[in-house]
Length: 154
Image (cartoon, rainbow, N blue to C red; front, side, top):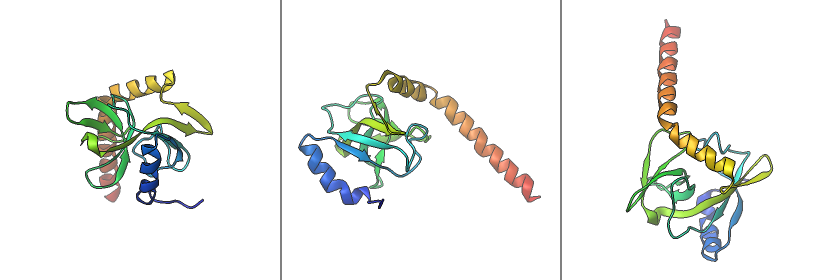
């Protein structure tokens, strides 16, 4: 199956969303949402934006660098959202006008999982809550890799 960039598809995506229609089977690139979403295996279903997004929502938005990104909202402020990928360690401040759509379900191993599913909601809360521990573990891994590289060069 041929891969098409989201920039190419964006006019069609916006048209469908503005008509109030969901878009199923949207693939993605990258590892920033692992372990929840896996590139080349899973897909998402997008729905039009609600009036106001909330914590734990998974929006598709245009990042400050111009790329389209799908990261979880971890905090809601008066004039922006704080987003973070499940496999990233840097927050991003995102203005509401940069939001395009929100994930309402994803497909994993052929099974459709709604974002309303209790297990999914529990996963989101847990994954956001353990962020500080995940960050410490990742830093320790980076340092250990650096130490191993230096030792192996000798």
